[in-house]
Image (cartoon, rainbow over all chains, first blue to last red; front, side):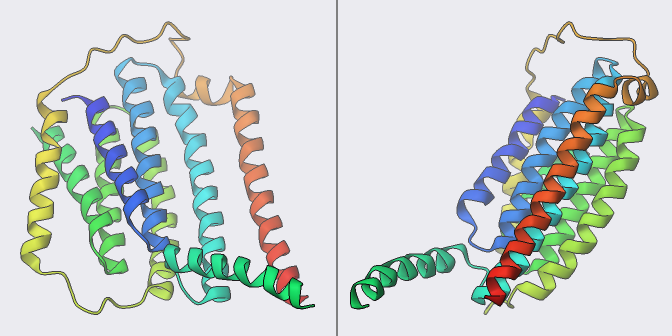
Length: 109
Length: 154
């Protein structure tokens, strides 16, 4: 049983989700999976080498991870309220069309 | 045997969390992944980390459930069960390399002989740096929210 390969597999699953999914909640879940893969690597290597430093580091990394999740969720709620969608491509299209409209308005005025 | 089953379960639940369209099912699958990860940590002797993992993941999942249910629309048509099973099977195949292959790892020559409490409380530099990082992240988040609110008002 090799935890490094397991961690790489989870990392690959997370990156696949990050690249292919359009819904922002799914993107957040992918980020969680990637963070989980990284922390698993840390904890299991540290505990197999009988070194508590890695475990202690991870306790603090968990709190950072929870902060990141909270901030991303706050941004997600703001974006959804402002634009009415959670779809990344639709959001990108909206931004593009807003950028195209701005020079036209400036030229008219 | 139990570690191999947990490894397969981890990969399958991660794949299903990404694949399933309905937010509630997806987050339930993520919850399974968190739970299996905590069991894996406990079985490998990292009991404190397993407990922290469970505590942090409980909060994360509660918030994710709320946000997922609030923000996601219902999919027009559900994915067929056959397709879901085939994704789970594929994920189980992906977990096979971690069960049967192995990579040689040489542990780095860093501090050893610390107990968990020593590592957590005596190495204050790491603690202070990481806590500072956490506070800075929270401050950044608050600043972003306040900026958005100010822009919305003007």
